[in-house]
Length: 133
Image 1 (cartoon, one colour):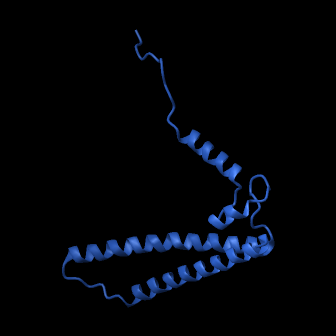
Image 2: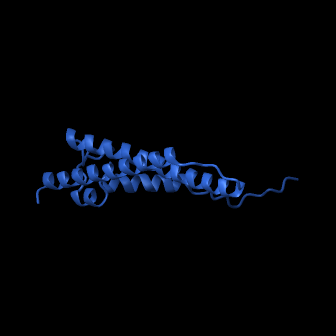
Image 3: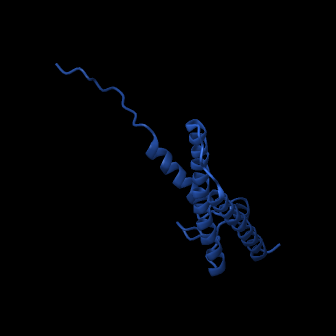
């Protein structure tokens, strides 16, 4: 299968995923609008509020994912999909099939991860004397 055909398969999968996420968000909104949240027991009310909080947090993450998916669809439509944001090289189609949200080629992604790892590593402090006389 040609690269362009595979990219269209990825686009179709992204559109489908975005539709599912939007549907979930709409269901949550409808459920919240129709809910009657009057509880005589404060513990029941606290439980329901906790569940709502978790659900809203999940929907917020999904909202961010929808934005990322929209960006990827725009990149496909404009011909920029599959081009590394850092070095400009073509991202291998197998990487895009496995992780369609990839904006970096494997080499640049590894460099970024190594940089993050080095940045977050604790500083090694050895052979320092704390005895001041």
